[in-house]
Length: 212
Image (cartoon, rainbow, N blue to C red; front, top):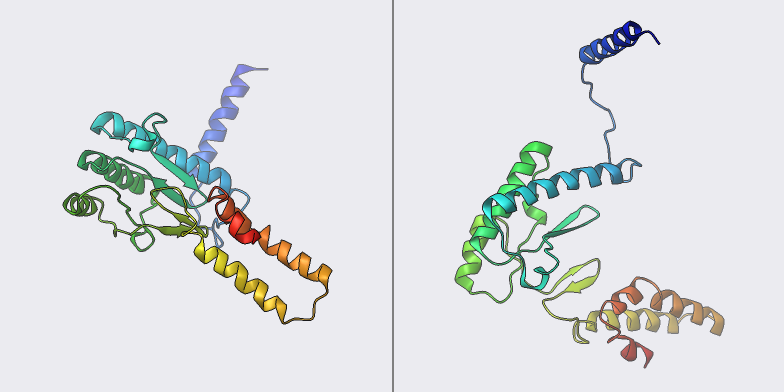
């Protein structure tokens, strides 16, 4: 192949590329689009790189439970969980990383849907850390995907709302004209649905109560 032809083709391609203007999409990229998972992963990889650079530059204290793993954050769907030691240095590192990421990706923190959760620290330190992040302070336990998030293992007490909900559904069916097979199907649909997943997260402490 003639090298001059290759060079000409390359220059022609680049010239065409540079004169193309930006145009706005009428629909845009929304959640559920086939490209969404790939773009989300790419964007979060960028955030991870920014966070790692800030940790090396500014310092960071890992959460005591995740020091061995050096875990800093977990992403699930469109939610971001950041776990960090309760020190001002660590919170400033996180804050700077989020601000830098927001400027680069135009993805700013939604303060109405964000919260900070603390455990095992004084009220004074909690207030100082909350001021650094400028995020509302929440109280544990809180529910995420219908599962309570606590600082300790989920107990039978935490499962009370799950147990009451399942019993209420079964009680409603008692007054309906459904044969035995139909009742079995309805009960299994509840016990092996989302509520069953909720119970499994509690290390099976709810299962003996449900079997009664």
